[in-house]
Length: 91
Image (cartoon, rainbow, N blue to C red):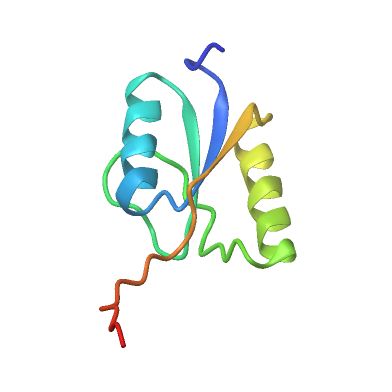
C-alpha cells in the first residue's frame, strides 16, 4: 500500500505504540488523524478532539471529521486501549 498522500486514523495515537505509529506515518508523508482521549504532541497530525473508541458515536464523529479534513480515508490502525499493571498475588 502507498503510504504517502493517503489518510489514516490511528486509535490510541497519543502514546505508546500508537504515538510511534503516528510519527512514522507522518514521516512517510501520510495524512494522520489521531483518535485518542488526549492530544498527541508534536508532528502535524490532525486531532479531531477527544475520541472514546468505546463510543460508536465518538468514532463516527472522528471518521466524519477526518473525511471532512482530508477528503478520504485509506485505513484505520487500531491501537487504542488501556494497560493496567498490577501485582499478581499467588495463594
